[in-house]
Length: 329
Image (cartoon, rainbow, N blue to C red; front, side, top):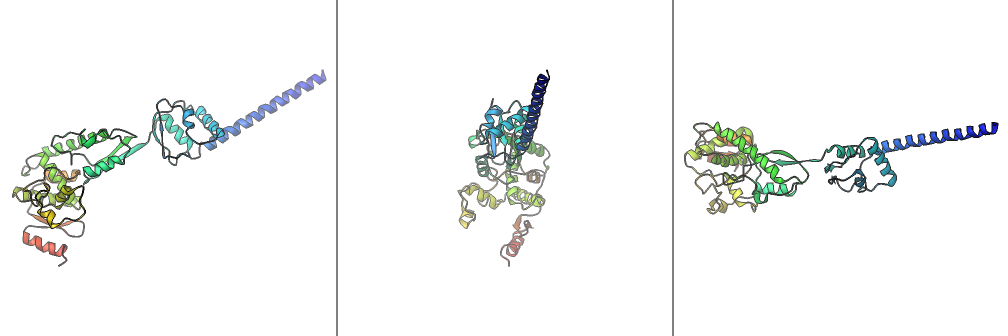
């Protein structure tokens, strides 16, 4: 009887010891899991795409990690109830496994920026789209509203956010819609003495102001000069229009031949009025300067070397300013 008691006691001790070992091992394993999930994800790309219906198990198979570390991650996934991987494109750069897996569970997909800069043109935009993560479904910008017979200048400069492989049409249409809303609201408030006959003309002139102005403060002054010239049926003589007409092959220098070129439909040294289309995207400050402005007393301006311009009423004054600021005489 005593031997049986000792035998049972021994078996009980072994069971307790085994339970203790298992418990300690389990705690150690969970500790290892908690430690590993705080380590950085090692992947050959800076982002990762989860396909529709892709499981966490299949996801882990795409990463070069040991069998033991996969068990640690699977344990973390199970304990935290991360049952479903949300389809999408996710940032992975400098992320821990913990952050990465939880991001996938809640669908915190990577967000991209698409920035249209004031003064940029459609050539710039094409390059921007090409280097983006957007799906290009708007060839030659044919997805956009052509109500003014031009697309240039009808996209609102701003920063737009999108998901991986979103259609570019969704971004561009949003930009154009916002631009039309802004410009139409301004046109309703236009100054009664403003000589422009249509909003399309105002958009074209605003794009020239955008490219000519050195800062926002002088935009009303530059707009006033151009409005004065238009009221007098005087050529605008704006260098940026010549440059636009030479794109995409402009080499950086305007020559005398460029100034005399009557075949360049954007050459405002030759054409009697506005060019056929805008020459760039337009900030609201340029639109306001043109639509809410009126002709001022000036007809000329020249860059003064400070990032702004010097304004003149007469050609004689203008020549003096050119000698001073351009020829250093």
